[in-house]
Length: 82
Image (cartoon, rainbow, N blue to C red; front, side):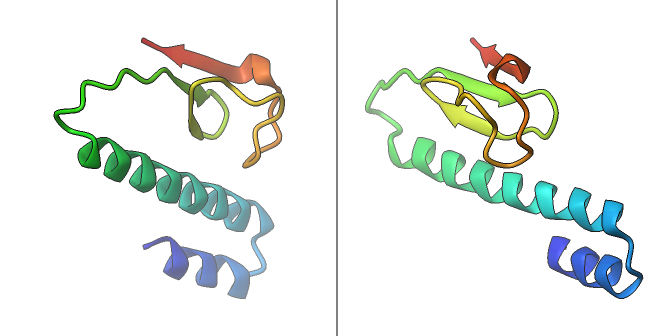
């Protein structure tokens, strides 16, 4: 879905739309990896703390980064998910 949106935004020279779709695409790829990791560990009783960037939705394990690698938001924009 996002690759098509990215192509259209690029063709229309809509930088804001392109940025939004690019960020969403990157975050969805991260989410897919986290979901798969969790599925692969079913039955292992592993507890993981997640942090979500309030700006772009990037989700990370264990500790929030100093700067979001997706949108460059500061660590303070990450919310711990219990």
